[in-house]
Image (cartoon, rainbow, N blue to C red; front, side, top):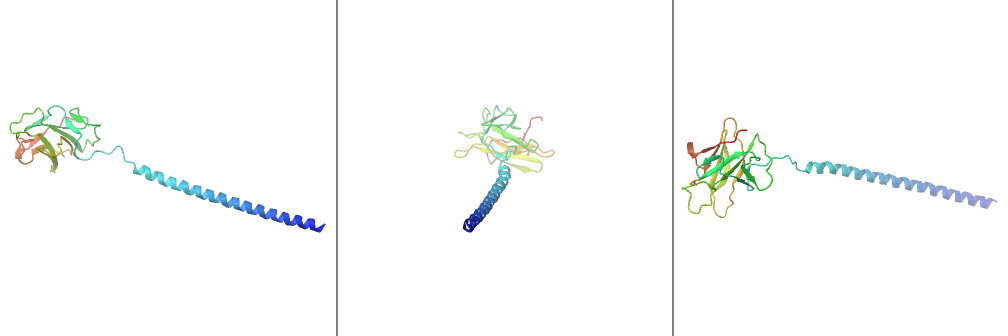
Length: 198
């Protein structure tokens, strides 16, 4: 009678210990899975803001400088020597864009396009390729645009995004070196460019 009782107690003890071990292992496994899930959630939540911050803003304005995707329709609003010029904003119908017009800050930036097509120029050298935008600079409140004679081997640039003049300043054009293009009757051979009324 004692042996079956003893065997029963021993088997009961093993079953109880095994059950506790199983519960302990299950609890540890669940805790580990929860911790891993929290780490993944944290890593995902950390990654999301970084990806959002890295996306470029579609509202960014175009940089100042030459534009190879811009040309001028017609002969321009202003006539300088051997050259027609228009200044305005990207949506001005005088401008021809190869793609969509860029976004600009209309309080600080303006678009300039030039052409020699259809403009008589007795001073142009034989075989001239016309004029090309060279650059701009600020002088006080004025903005001065320089054009040069286009030459083989160099890209011909017919437009640019430039700063607007400040205060009572104006936008002027001048020729680079001996180029006949862009000269005016103003002091220093400057040609004043007229912007369309706002």
